[in-house]
Each structure stands twice: as structure tokens, then as C-alpha cells.
Image 1: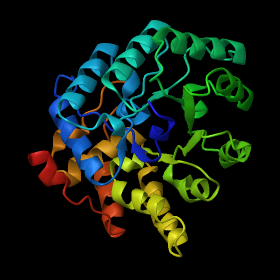
Image 2: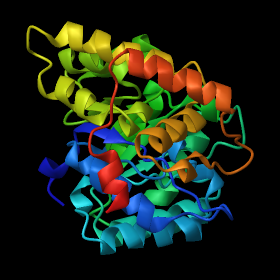
Image 3: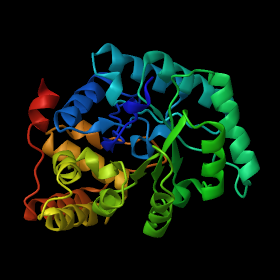
Length: 310
């Protein structure tokens, strides 16, 4: 896989539609992925907001197979493959590589806390060595507010030294701009740095970053991509402020149930509201308040209802 194939732009951790029995609905997921692609957003399936860690490895493999079999371009797919168990990470990552996915977004093993860099290095190294493919492209996933296991600058540099053609990027979901800024200042050769939210997108692009991988790309993909594409324009700061306003409304509520409620409303399909326990759907009053606030900001999701009905 040529290094020019390293991913950039806006990617979406696609929310996972569930049936009444809480099983994933692959047909509905495919349609959602197609809508997102039509808005110029790539697919970081099995991300945090995909409820990925509530899905089994078998479920993820089946969903990934169905997505690829549908004809969706594997060059636009960066599945999350990091699991707590080493064999699970290896199995899922190997499958993604065999299918030709452009990269894998890889959490560290996150159950054990206070592990040191040696342990995390060993984990990533074991995965890379066991997958054993020159086509593997790993994008590290740094999300300490959720995982409670962070990836230090020293660890990143150690992995880059050992695997310069394999460890090719990172999603920084620390929520700490100073951390992202420090990474960008290092100017690691060809290393792709993605902000974990569009609220940092303009700053990331101005400092040489690759784009963002953001939860709210599920609902506001076109506008986020537009800022990515036009970050050097005179209107970029205003566009960033508009993105921030939408993000702020959504963040008033638990993120995953809120995203699903928004898609359910604008896609005219209430089944999208279903989440897998331990998550809980928004109550009706929360949904009404959320949608009203968005509509007051002129928010819409053009073509979503037509896509879901097709």
C-alpha cells in the first residue's frame, strides 16, 4: 500500500443501527454509510460513537463484510479494531487488512489502568507483528477521557521509530488542544494527526493536521467537510463558529443517544433511537428539546430520509 494512500479529511465514527432484539442492522448501516459518503465524509466504523465496545468481534466482522460486499470503497474505510484482548485485536485487524481497508483506528487495551509505555508498546508491537502485513496502516486512538489509558508522546515516537511505514497517524480525542498542538509541533514525517472533534478542526488544519474524526460528522457531515476543504478561506472562522454551535447543542445530552435521536428524527425512522445497554435512549422531553434547539439554528440533514427509504 503506497504511503500516498494515508487517509486525511473528515471521517465519521458511524452510529450503529440496532433491531428490536438489539442485533445490528447491516442494511440500514450500509445506507447510512452511503449517505455519509455522499457528503464527502469517510467511514471510521466501530468507533466510540458506533457503540463498538458493545459489539462482539463476530458482529464487527459480519458488518464489515456486508459493507465491503455492498460496493463501498475500502479506501474510505478506517474501522476501529482495538480491543482489550490481544487475539481479538489481531483477528479484527487482520480481517480489515485482508479486505483492503485503508487503515485501522486502534485503541490501546483499556481495561487495565496505570499501565506504562513499555506495556502499551508491547501491545501495539504484538498486534503489528502478528498481523504481519506490509499493507497494515495503524492510526493510534488517544481518548483518555473514556479509555483512561493515554498514549504519551514518547510512546508515539517509539512506535514511529520501530514501525514508520505502519504507524501512520493518530486521532487525538483528549479534548486538550495543547496535547494536539504538541503533536503537530513535532512535525513527524508524514504522520497524520486528526482532531477528535470538529471544534478543533480549523486550528488543526492551520497547524498542518490531517482533518478530524468526529462524532457529530454523523449528523453534520457536509458542513464539517466544507470547513476542511476551505479552511484557508476568509469565512473559515465563521464556519468554525457555526460548527461549534451545533456541537454545543448536541453535547448537552449523552452523545450516542443524542446522535441516534437526531438521525431518527431527520431520517423519519424512530428505530434509530435504539441503543444497546448499558446506554439508555433519551427521554421524549429531551428529544423534543434537542430537535427544537437544532431547528432554531437552521439545522437540517438533506437527503437522509430519502436514503433510508431507498
